[in-house]
Length: 203
Image: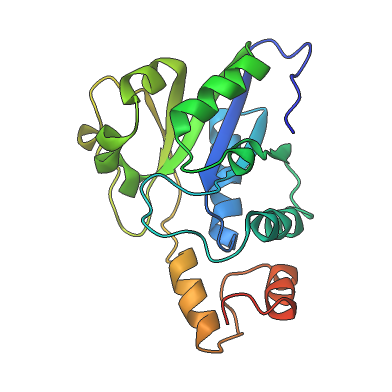
C-alpha cells in the first residue's frame, strides 16, 4: 500500500501504468528515458487490475503481474516503486481516480503520466480527462512508428515529449509467442521469462 511521502516538496513523479501482462524491456527503458529527460525524482509502476480501454481481462493474475514487475526491476538503477492502488481497486481502473489518490497521498508532487504516442488519439475517451489534465501532465514518447502528433490530444492537455526510439515490443505479441512455444530472445528479462515458464503462464 502506498504511504504518503514526508518532506517531498515539489517532487516530480512519473507514473507508468498498464497491464504489464507481461512486463518487457521496453517498459523499463521507457520509464528510464522519461525519468532522465524530464528530471523525474521517481517512477511509480502502476499495474492495473482491469484497464479501462482494454476489452478483455489480463491473462496473468494481479499478483503474478506484480511479481514479474518486481523481478524485472531488481537491477533497475533509478528510483522506483510499484503501487498496488489499481490492483486493490475492484473493477475497471480509471486514471483520474488514481491521480486523485496519488495526490492525496503526495500532495506536493507534480505528476507526469507516461504514455506512448499511440495513446494521444484516445485521450478524449478517458474518464474526466479535463480534470485529469489539470491535475497531471503527460510524458509522451513515440511508440511502434506512431509519430507524436500532439494535435491528436485534447487542446488542454499538458504534454512533455520524451525522445524514445520506437521499440517493436508489445505484451500481446509476447503472449502469442509464448503460447506458440517460443522461448528465445523475446525482449523479456531472463528471470521474468524463467518465472513465466515455471508458472506456465500464457502457455
